[in-house]
Image (tube, rainbow over the protein chains, first blue to last red):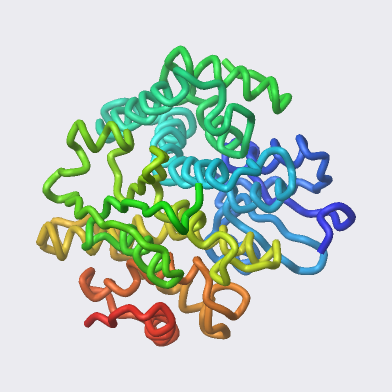
Length: 201
Length: 201
């Protein structure tokens, strides 16, 4: 399979940071794709057709004309960015990038994306939200602030997939009712500028 | 940094599947390490000393004599296994391995490991556990069963880090009160045999 000459189809929801990660990286690297808008809220990821494509019922899911299917935003980014400057050459820096990608999915997305979804899309009032959730968001942002205070990027002092992944939901923090600490806010602007994506809020 | 001649220190909790992943892969590849038992239940991951090492307060955390620190079980496995037969050579198979590693942390560990912890360690009764949690475990095991029915391993018909990661908590499923479907049960035995790890239950 060549990524260059076989155009891929991205099943994605434009309000999902996870799906936008694929767009950010494909656009950055000039990889062509067709985007098939697939709404999580409208349960378009739960149809029989979609589950036949991805039994986990999650977007983004990417398909290629030869029948290959790949899910999980960070795995898709890793495939698209293979051999590019978004993946550090140094093995230990690359491992640190993986560390942040796993932390993003385990600790960051499950706090910031979930709080944003409950507040911005489900329109839940504060008393309807587990009080532990905003506290976890604060801890996540605090950890990012501590890491970024002496740094411009998450790994190796240059843009990598760690930044592309972490910026995806961090830039929506205002929709979760959260304020970004100083260094995190500056890093969001920096990464948005590098990836040529719009600043929100 | 050479992984061969600078012995690493693994801060790990022996009851944690995430920590055991590091042991499985290091043992398989003959990579020496010192294991520092670090109990999550005894809150040894919350001391000031530990948080200075890893602000996320999670095990496993690995350190090297030159001061480098790496967290996140799957990131540690990826570093240790670099260049070994546990990582597929084919870029798309490698991406599928990443897909399963991210799915493991996002959907599998957060179901099976959490239910096991609540039942086996916190000794909670069924009525004290969110009824959605065992349902998510059933869905996770069902997805694995569907994937494994026509396959012997998760990716590329040979053992990879996808299997090492997914077996870590799947082999503890009985401690979560779960029965393994046929193909998943056979796969657990196969992976345990290949990794030379004890069969439980």
